[in-house]
Image (cartoon, rainbow, N blue to C red):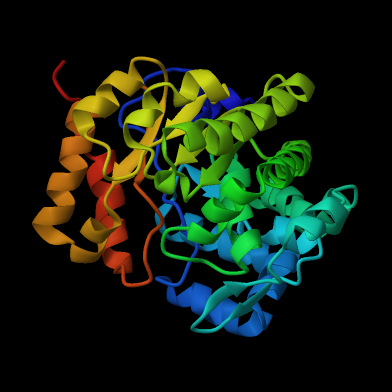
Length: 347
């Protein structure tokens, strides 16, 4: 079938569609009881990511429940360092951990086998495209080089990514080498996802908000621009969403500098500013995930404000970050109903 029937692809081509298509970051996750059941069967979290049978199942679960306009591949941004042999593991109650990398370790990295290592993930993409309804877009994804590098340097998540920032100041050449290697292998990985059946892909820069102006340009903009240039040189039809969480005013030039087709907005982005960003092209977002936890009037007002401000332009309705485990599945159902039942805002 033609992508033109998939509403998200129409928006990514710059078309305003109302009501807007919607999906939610982390829509397959711990807030769903069926996800928790599958997670228990899979064993470790990485086994869940690398076993196509289980990864397909959890990707499809929110589509069956809510009929979102897009399914996003179930995986994790840290499969890239896992493929780079950094001994990634997920410990219950502690989050992701891996062997921290130093300057010498960066020099020894080789990205030649990354895509081959991630063949199980690509098999999941192929199966998903066969099993999803024709009208449902399939999104692939990866982490942005800066965000992935922060975990590789520290060996775990930190509140402000101080270890990676300090390393970048003390070892600028090694850090740049790491970012560019991550950009290249991540671009290869996204091209492989597109070839396997992904309609579009998203680049998650979850820790962009901790960077100063010069660092944002060097660590968040330049590597993502390198990725997008590489992807589009090989797959000109590729549609790419870039999500730089916490970037604030620096989003003003982010689309232009990176070449992204759409930019994701976190919930802290003022809607008047979002309107200005939308004049340059599609935007995605940006409901506070806590409104989904709260439900009721807080949820309704948050949805209505976004639609009133952004509904007349190219918009993919989403959260401003991932849905939390505390979210009530019933609140998600009400969110979907309110977005789809809403009236076109006045100009």
